[in-house]
Length: 629
Image (tube, rainbow, N blue to C red):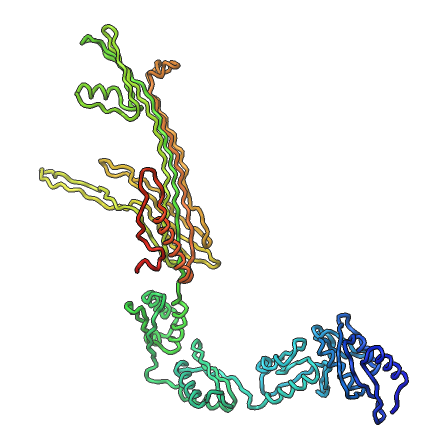
C-alpha cells in the first residue's frame, strides 16, 4: 500500500496529541483512515478532514463545540467526508457546498445559503440540496400537511399550486426518501374533490341518505375507494371527496335523487331559546316579502308563530328554508343584560332669623287716642293679638321667644312686644334606584306614592238641584327611572334616560303642590363607569325689613320701630348613573349576590340613631341560595 509521507507525519502527530484519526495499511492501492475522537474540538476535525479530502472549508464563527467519534472500520476519503457531514448534522451544523469552498454554518441559517439544486435527483448522502418534485395527479396543497413533519426545522418545504409541484430543501438522503413517498402517493387513484349543486332536492335529506349508505358499506376504518360527503345547507350543494370512480358513481346517484316532486315544500317546527316567536315571525315575513320576486314561491312560504311554545312553524322550499334557518340561528341568541344604577344626592340647608318689636299706647279716657306699631314679618302682628283679646279668643302667638312689657303713666298706658326666632334645618337625601333590563329593551322603575289630585267638583245646578261630586286623578309621586340601554362594540352603553324625583310640598284648597326634578338625556358610558347626569346648585337668600318711617332709621333706637326677617336656603342636587353589562349567567348571579349581601349587612348592622332602639332580629338567611328554602 502506498502511504504518503506527509499524511503519516500529520496522522502520527495528531494521534500522539489527541487520538483521533489513525491511518492503517490495508490491501490495495487506496489510502484509508480509522476515526477515533474523544472531546476533540470541532475546528481540529475540520482541519484534518480538509487535509484528507483536499477540500477548502469556510467556517462560520458560530461553529464551536467538541465532538466524540468511535470507529474501528477503516474508511477512504469519501467515507471520511460523509462521516464528517453526519457529525456536523448531529451537532446542529451543516455544510453547504459552493464553487471554490464548502461553507460550514449553523443549520438555523442554512436556508439562506446558496444550496445546490439537484435537478437530476442523483445526489445522495448528508449534503444539503434543493429539489423540485413535480406532481401528476395529486394537488400539491394536499401533500404539504402530510410531508411537513418529515422535514427538519432548518429545512424548507413549499407547494407551488400553479405548477403543481413541491420544493424541498434538506439533506440529500431525506429528500430522496420524501421523493419516494410522494411517488407512491401521486397515483391515478388519488382523491379528488367535486361539488354537486342540487336544483330540486334539499341537501339535508340527500346528504343524510348518502351518509347512511357510506356508513352501512364501510367499517370502523375508512376502506379504499370510500367517499366523504359534506352538505352545504347555505348554498344547497354537496361537496364530495374520493377517487374518480367513486365520485362518478355517487354523482349518478345524486342526479337520480335530485328530481322534482309533486310536493316540494318542507315544514319544520323551530323552537326558539332566547328570541320572541312573534317578533321573529313578523321579521321573517317582511324579509320574505322584500326578497322574493317570484309571487308563486312567495305564496308557498308560510310562517306562523306559536306563542305557547315560543316556536315557529315554517313551510317553504328547501332553498328558502335553508336561508330562513340561517337567519333564525343568528337572531336566536342570548341577549346581554344591563344593570343601571342611579344615585340621587340632595343636600338642603335652611336658616331662618327674625326679630321684631311692636309698641302700643292708649289713653285711659274712653275717647282718648290709641296708637302703636304692627309688623307681620317677624311673627304675630300686634293688631291680630289685640283683635283676639277684644273677641276673647286665644291669641296666636308665633314660634320663638315672645316677651311683652306693659306700664302706665297718668292717663296713658303703654306696652311693648318683643318677638325673636332663630331656626336651622338641614336635610341629606340619598336615593339609589336601580333596574335590570335587556339590551335595547325599555325599563321603568317607580318608588313612591300614588296620590289623588282633584281635577274638578260640582255642587248645584241652575235649577237648584243638588248632586255634588268631586273628580280626582291619580298621580305618581316619588322617584321614577325610565331608560333604554343599547350595547355598542367595545363595552360601551348608549342610554336614553328619563329620571324624575318628585314629592308633595303642601295641600291647599286648590289641590296639592309638588316639588319635581326631572332629567331627560341621552348619554354614552363605558361598562362600570360612573358618570354624572346633571345637577342643581341653588342659593336663595330672602331678607325683609318692616319699619316705621323716620323712626325706624334712627341708629340703635330705630330697632324698636323695626321687624327683620332673614331666610337663607342652600340646595345641592346631583344625579349619578352607572351601567353594568351582564353577558353571562355568572355575571347575573354575581350581581344578585352583591345586592343581597348589601341588604343582609344592613339588617345585621342597622344605622345607629340616638334614642331609637336598633336591635332587629335577623329574618334573612346569610346566603341568597337559601332565600326560598
